[in-house]
Amino acid sequence: MNASIGHVHSRFEEFNDVTYGDLAGLAFPGSPEWSNGLGGRYDFRNGIYLGADAK
Image (cartoon, rainbow, N blue to C red; front, top):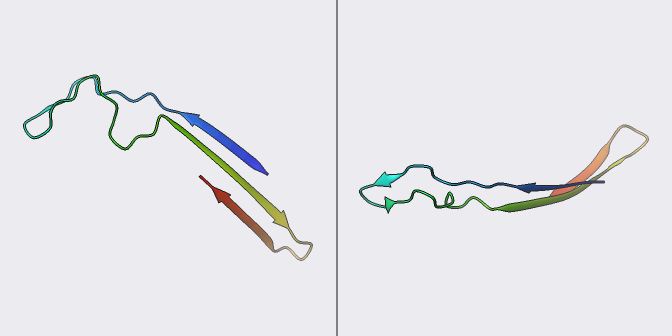
């Protein structure tokens, strides 16, 4: 079994665009502040393994 958790604090220091305007100080679009995952793996005696994970 394995588990993970992550935290990202993304901000534009400077960003001024004709189309989007001034985005300085705003978070990156599509960037989650928190993320997590869970997974596992089973090893059979014949060398084959089966694993899965979700994020």
